[in-house]
Amino acid sequence: MWTRISAMSDVIAPSKTVTFTVKAMPRRQADVKTIQRLMRMQRHIQKGLSRLAKRRRREDNRTYQRAGRDWTARVPAVKLVRVAKGETFTLRITPQIMPDIRAVEKYLDATSA
Image (cartoon, rainbow, N blue to C red):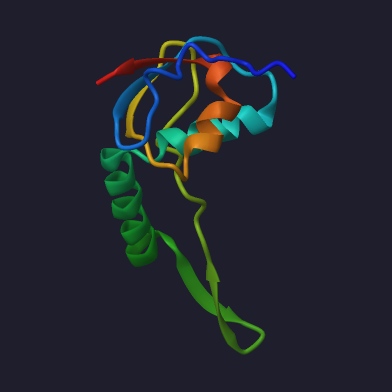
């Protein structure tokens, strides 16, 4: 049985910090979502998402009476990341995210940060 040897295998290892660049747009929506999920793991993106969640909870969601009970009309979350050719993101690699990286590695270029 042949095993595929990745060009990224020497760069990607647990507890390393790696910068990824999107080199091609995936055709499958599942691959786009996987890359978005990886991009959302950046510290400054997580901070922005939590700040926006607090704002939505405090100001944007609307509560009113519906059938005698309080009903909250919730505003959808804002997407702070977008997958496009040339977009870069930096992650600290953990064993938990290795399968996600392996699934979309053909769309990403990796360099040590």
